[in-house]
Image (cartoon, rainbow, N blue to C red):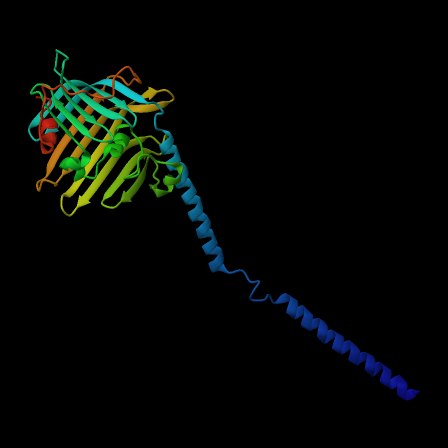
Length: 308
């Protein structure tokens, strides 16, 4: 009995000691986190960068959409204008008219000062360019591949139409769809935001108002090993209301090229006195049999001399 009384306390003490050790192990095990559950700083930073890039991409798409939405939704743009051309020592200003019908024609008419009779006409259509000199009864009619000053600079009808209509474009495409907006690289700034795109040797950059998303200027650059480098700058000003949108009444066009193996600068300014949507005019020009057709390579020279 005495022996049993001695052994019982010893057994109870042993059980308590084992239980205490097991509890301590569990506490230690619970308080030390595993490597799998420990947060990774690198992963968190990478996730933040991905989210930031997505947010920036969304902002860029939204701004490109806003710029695209500033275009006027009309079929015709018509207005009288003052047409000025500067090239070398030449600086001529004559009255005229600008008539445009979407996807059909861009027409510049040059008038005789004071008399108001037409002395020249330049038309761009999807298929050809037409230049008429009414004083000398001559004309040039050629497709875009026949005209070196257009072919050598990567310009076609839809490029010119977008520039005249104060709109975005994708080189080589007829129009800009919503799915194309991701092709523009957008760089934000406080006052002016830049949009740009490139296809082959042709690159385009637009400057748009950061607040209104209205295109204020465009620059088209074309680099060719055969023809050299050409730059077409287009600045817009004096915006007038056309429906719920705005259209620039003043276009300043600067053309610089080394395609003729020498640097050439030509500046054309179009100042429209009004911007209307009149449609009571024919989009097709009929050429009189009395007019003589001249070679396509003389088209640029003929355009330069229309004001004389």
